[in-house]
Every structure is written in structure tokens, then in C-alpha cells.
Image (cartoon, rainbow, N blue to C red; front, side, top):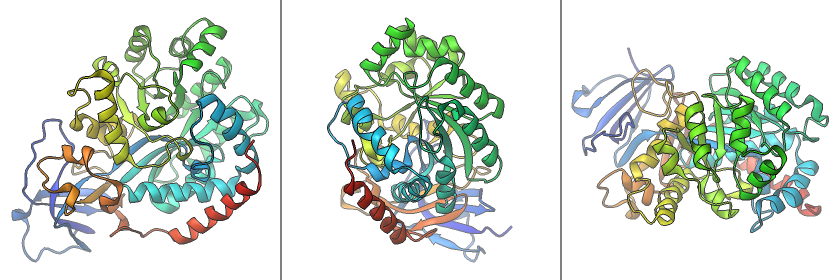
Length: 442
């Protein structure tokens, strides 16, 4: 059958196997109805083969789109608002007050749309988001054409869109029901902020909701020494042990950060089947510490990569995140073999998709999977010569992404967003930022 889209003359990184050999051979990839229908070497193509549309990928690498396993997209509005502060000061004195003043449906829609553009332009095709007014974020992601696991935030104090904290889980349940099965690009989910902002009762109720609906459950966990101390003093156990005793940890739970873990915590995470989303740049900027990724992986805990939000990173660039992840762990452990580039690439593609429950649909280039892929321009001074895909981790950058295809649709081509008016979105966010500038954030 005639494909809707034929990509040809591409070097290819499929991310099917850690042992995948690197070759200079050129490949083609066919897409039909949003799905990869065929992959092969260029020599297998006949000269006049029909296709709805062709993309000549000469000079580019075709690879799976990157998977950002944790961010707060709407917080693009707060990029640079409060830098160089400890986490609790940053949250309680700046971010929470700013959210109380400025977060509404309009803000979440436009700022999430801006985040989608930033991610698409930097090669991310799937994002896990957690915030308030998540209906607006979900609409923004669908309008932008990015695949998303979008989680409604749950927290035990008045929050944007949910002024009565007694209704926090009910609001999340209504949100999940509105979106489940409604759009091929959107998976609804539940995001409990943390064990220090959510009571055990809330943590359990939210988990019961997620389990009943069979959707992912996200939670910030063991991000700082202070968090661990607070939870230990209040409950007599670590944050990980608390969640384990509450029955919250399982294969549909994604624990974000996990910086401060004891050996007992590592064992509990491994036994539960829960996954971890690590955000190295955010942890570095907030001086939270460095997650023990090599020990987590040694225990068999699946680990993906996330950027966290723009207010604590300050960008959504997964190429930068990969670079930071590979290097910081080498420095901390004084072992240059820790977190090798290929392992980090897996974390940012197939493993990331797997921990979000999408491993059978995206994260690698295989016939039958959804067509989520990017073209990286290798014809750049900093990517010359290109001996091996490890170079992507240590030298590639966001601006090297030439084209992004999600669900078989070209959403960005030649560095231009194709699905919406980016200039309009940026102007909307600038106007919102003007309101922030007029009022103090605390």
C-alpha cells in the first residue's frame, strides 16, 4: 500500500537494542495512518516508488523522538522568575505565591503551548506533564500535536482551579474521565505533588483513582535532605518507606527525583516495580543533590529522564539533559564508565516511553509502532566527524533537530513549527509575563 510519508536517505538509530550496531548505511522509513509500516535499506527501494509525501533526509540521522518523563509545562511563565534559591525557599516564597496569583486556564493553555513548541523544536515527541488546570494543558498539547501523558495536580491546600483541597482527588477523577480514550495523543494521569504536601489519606485516594482508571501516578519523592527529614520526623520513616507502607508504589507509579535514597529505599523501589524520573539539571540548579542512578539501575529500577519545569531548569532541552546526566554522574562517582552515552540515550527514548506505559507504542523505530521520530542534522561542525551515536549525548544540541514527526504528522520541519502559530503563542505569553512583572511574586 502507498505510504502517507516516505523518509529516505537517512542514517538510522532505531534504539531497538543496546547492542544495535552503528552503520553508515542509508535507510528509508515508511509511515501509514500514523504508524511505521516499513523500514529498510535504500537499496530495497525502487526508483519510482509511490508515496503521499517524501522527505529527503540526506545528511541527517533518523531516530526516535525524545521522551521527557517529567515537567510542569505551564511554568514557562516563571522561567527566570526566582533563580539561585534553595528548593523550599524557591517554592514557598516565590513559586507557590506566583501560582496563586497568575495561574488560570488561559495561562496554562498558552504557556503549555509555548512549552510544547520548545520541546518539539528540541526533539521531544512525548512529554509527561503535571500541573493544575490540566484540561487546558491537555488541549494545548493536542493542538500542538505533541504526545503527552498529562497529569492533574493533587495537593492538600487551595490550588489553582481547586480552591477546596477536600475536592482535590475528585477534581483529578473528573479530569481523567474527561480525557481517557478521547485523543490518540493524550493519556490522562494523576500527579500527587509530594509526601510533604499531601496527607497519607490523599496519597492513597489518588493512587486508588489512578489504579482504578489504569493511568500513571506521579509523585515528587526524596528530592532534598530537608524533605527526607520532614517526613522522617512526622511519620518515623523515609518518604519511600512511607509510600511503600501505604501501598502506593507499584509498576504504574513514577517517582520523580529520588535523590536521597538509603539502601533500604533502593530495595523497596526495586521490589515494588516503581520507576524513577531523574531531572539532573533541576537537581543541580536547586542544589538538591545527585540521584544514585547507577545504584538504581543496578537494582533493576527503570529510570527515565525529565527536564522538570522551566522555573527550575530553565529550559526543556532533553539533549542538554542527556549531556548533564552522563557527565555529572561520572564526576560524582569519579568513574568515567558510569552512565555511558548509549545508556543515557535509552533513558531518553525507549526506557522513558516504557515507564510512561507507552513502550509498546513509541520510544524506538519498529514497524507497527507509532511514527514518533526526529531528524537530527549531522551536517554541523560540532557533529563532524560522527563516529557513533554517543556523539549525540556529548555534542548535539536542540538546534540540530531539523524535523519532528509525531503520530505520523510532520509537526516541525526545517526548524519551523507546522501545527500552530508560534509567534501568536509567544506574544500571548509575553503579555502574561507583563502582568507578572507588575506585581511582586511574594
